[in-house]
Length: 104
Image 1 (cartoon, helix red, strand yellow):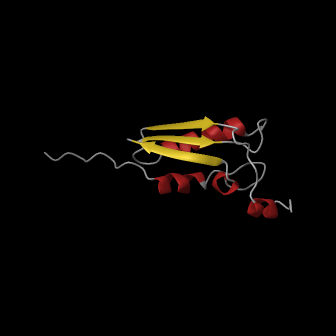
Image 2 (cartoon, rainbow, N blue to C red; image 1 turned 30 degrees about the horizontal axis):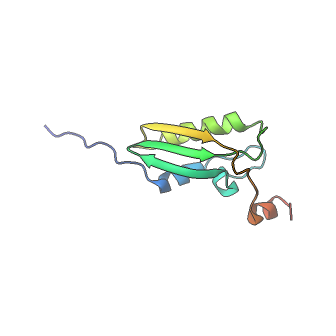
């Protein structure tokens, strides 16, 4: 009787590709491009993401956190998806983002 091998551990690249599908509903840009993701840690199928919002009072914050947790949790091999919100350091738009948003 052959056993099915366990799914391999997800890669950081797989997580990033999923994060690029999560769009900020106010800015209409993905959260990876916006620079809202500060860190991705993967350990034995557990994915921990440190992210921020464009502002501490971001009305879409809970929705974004839930969407990230759900989409990352659906990647094959992910056993647990944890999203930690931080405001340290506060988010600051990159020059490229500022240009796209007409802030230059």
